Every structure is written in C-alpha cells, then in structure tokens.
Image 1 (cartoon, helix red, strand yellow):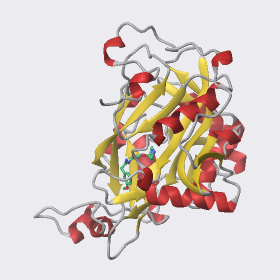
Image 2 (cartoon, helix red, strand yellow):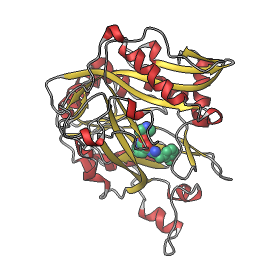
Image 3 (tube, helix red, strand yellow):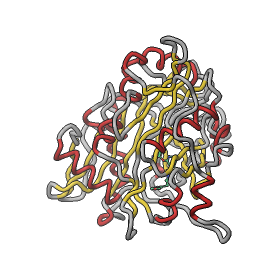
Length: 386
Ligand SMILES: COc1cccc(CC(=N)NC(=O)c2cccnc2OC2CCNCC2)c1
C-alpha cells in the first residue's frame, strides 16, 4: 500500500498525466473548508509556534536538530540555526498560523511550516498566490502514528481558509508526483575535513595532500568590484533578479521588501555579494546560505559547515567566474563544502569548477496543479528552497 496518503491528494497520478488539463486539479470552494483543526490522538495538541519567542524557537531548533532530514547513509543531519529559521520563516506577509506545531505535555513533537509566495508557472500570464511548505518533522520516537499526514492536512486546511489552493515543496523521497527531479552537487573547500568526517573518501591512488592541492583556491576573488550587498543595492538587485528569473518555467516575483528580507546579508545565515564596477551600477550578484550538518558519530568533528548556492545573477561577469568567486568567498567565510543543485544555469559551472555529484536527488512538487509539460527539466526550475 505505498503512498496510501498521497493517492487521496489532488496530485496527478501516472495515468492521468495525459488526460488532466493544465491548471488546478481540484477547484477550491471556500465554503467547504473545515473551520476547526483536524482531530489529534489524545494528549496531542496543536500550537502556533512564535519563532520570535526564544523558548519556542529553541524548542523548534532542538526538534529539528535531533529529528529532521539525514543523508542516505545517516551520517549527517541538517542543523538549522534559530537565526536561520527566523530568516526562512518570518518573511514579509507571513501568517502566524502557518508555523504549526504539535505538542505532548508541552513538548514539541511535530512541526510543519508554510510561507506565502507568488509563483509564476510555465510563463503563464497568471501568477498563482500559494504557500511554500517546508520543515515537516515528526519526532523519531513517535513515528508510524500517521502524524505526518495529519500535519499536512492541517496546514492544507489553514492555507485553504485563506482562499489559497496550491503549494510548492521539495523532498528527497519520491511520492506522487514530482514536477522535476534535480540532482545535488558539492564542491570541496576543506578536503581534509571532508575526508575526516566521511563526507568524501579517498580512492587508492589519492592522498589528502593531493586532494588539498586539487581543490586549492586563490586567497581573493577575481571579479573587480565584488563586495557584500548593502541596503542601497536593494532596488538594483530586485530589478536584476526579477528580470533574470523570467527565463525559467517556475519562478517567484520579488518585491523590494522581499529582496531586503531574502538577500541582505545576515551573519551565519545568508551571504550576498554584488558586482559594482563603475560608480553605483550593480551588474551581477551571487548568494549562498549557511546550513550546517551535525556529524552524527565522529570522534573529531561535531559539524560540517556547508554553504548552499542560493540565487546567482550574472549579466556582465561570466557565470563560471562569478561562481569561482563564490567558492573563494565561502572558503574565506570558513565553509568546508559548497553545495548546489543542477537547476537554473548551474550546469554551466558544476563540472568546470570541480563539483562532484551527490548520492541523492531533490524532487520538486506542486500541489493541486497540472503542468502543461508533465515534468520540467532541472534547468527550467528557477526557485530555490532552503
Ligand atoms: C551533508 O549533510 C546532509 C544532511 C541531510 C541531508 C543531506 C542530503 C540532502 N538531502 N541534501 C539536500 O537535500 C540538498 C542538496 C543540495 C542543495 N540543497 C539541498 O537541500 C536543501 C533544499 C531543500 N531543503 C533542504 C536543504 C546531506
């Protein structure tokens, strides 16, 4: 009985891929939306988590740190910081009842989140207001209680009562039905550490010294005029980003307020650098976010410091050079590895900059929407989820 839950959801299944017409799969009817929360098994209670409150934020941090996504070999687990979670989940226009927790005796054991986004789909004139779902997590000790489907149904209800009927999300697993299957790549910045934590391995003919030499980077970036983004750059970065994203089949449109939130540098959360060659003119920018992983069992290291490629817009600077500078900047900020998906234009630099393929894939999903084309190629995806 695979996908017992997902068969009940408005997602195209394999044999409908031809018959369904593009657009919403189910029409949303506001009057039919259930007004009260879904029932929970006894002693379990719903709560809206206020991430601005230090105690509640600490509870979310600990639940995720101990129970969230691990790599396929269960050697690493994402370790999102509190400041990162505030960045990711408190954007302009956030709805407090979309940060959903389940508690047992005041202890947080379940979590799921939504943020409001406006998604442009397949260059349709219509842009769709929807939710971006993330951080679905159930405590390891209470799995197989079928709590995850209830968390999904409850946040769906809370989105429906705001008259929104679609969602976008990613997952490492395949459930009905991905709109794109992307692959992730990593570029070594600290070869010795990656080998010590078991992220990378040495083949017979390789040595640590050889690996360090292979991945060595210059001290300073190459691009003249590269500097951290500042508030004064917001208007130009907004224009550059919105113009750049139009080439993809899935992309968000950003207001200046949203660019302020998502791109102004925050220490240990998001780094954004702009290229300003001639006086006051920003021509390119690069950005990466900080998502460390706990090394689950290792005598020498507790964490892997990983930078994740966010949005990079190269209009005057060659994308390979811009991303080479991103590697140098990330190395100088103390990262051990730089990760990227094969989405947007990333294929153009992955091989040349010596990224290696990871051992898994990241699947993109659109809830309650049939695309014109069944699957999108990774390079047609213009959205990055954290
Ligand atoms: C190295 O430590 C890990 C700890 C947990 C999982 C993985 C593998 C993995 N699943 N990686 C990704 O999903 C991934 C790889 C490259 C770029 N973005 C990614 O995921 C992002 C976007 C989706 N939400 C999680 C972070 C690695």
